[in-house]
Length: 250
Image 1 (cartoon, rainbow, N blue to C red):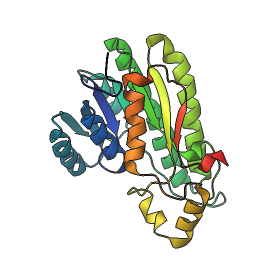
Image 2 (image 1 turned 45 degrees about the horizontal axis):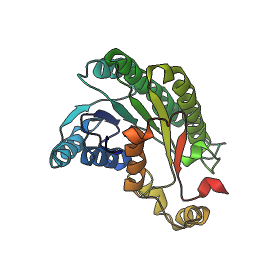
Image 3 (image 1 turned 180 degrees about the horizontal axis):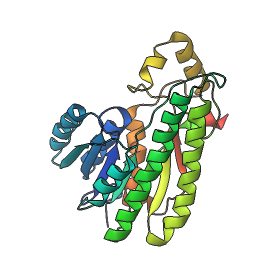
Image 4 (image 1 turned 90 degrees about the horizontal axis):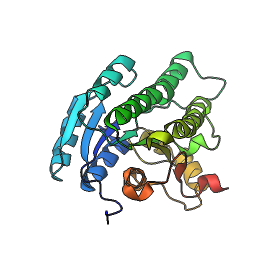
């Protein structure tokens, strides 16, 4: 019987892997037996990650890659020798009131959170089909892909879109044995969210909105990613694992 969370023999691509949730997911996937392909825009962060993954005994291929560059993404993923899963993690936000969202911020949120996510997922799916691999695509969403939030109109739009994309791709790709899901975290003290949480008023709002009264940890989000890449989740597709301490239950 295959161990339910054993990822031995799998190669998993992680985008936005240099820091935060992507880095934590890459490390936990490696600890579970997977070889890692890590991409982000900052090579120095990837080199540090490669050394950490190496300490687990797994390999880590790294590449400085801007996932908004569609041609580069398709070429890179198409050229991989092996691929069994992808953590589609790269994303961005700039909290602004709906009346104040500027074109530059709007375009960057859409380009990274939606267009790039689709490009990575599509390229990975094509690679799975070519390799005849029943792969797993895990799109990093947010609790804000399920509810509204202050100063997050563009971000919520992008994450609701990502949730819809995930469900539709899951239906299209099921015939190939490819699964597509999201992980939807609440606030985590990552390099992206950490500066906002340093504001006492905002931190109080966040903690007051989470029934469990605490932030999620990077490892708790990474654990959901491991589950969705593992044999035990073979019948899980087109859904979202919401790791939010109860925020969206209210």
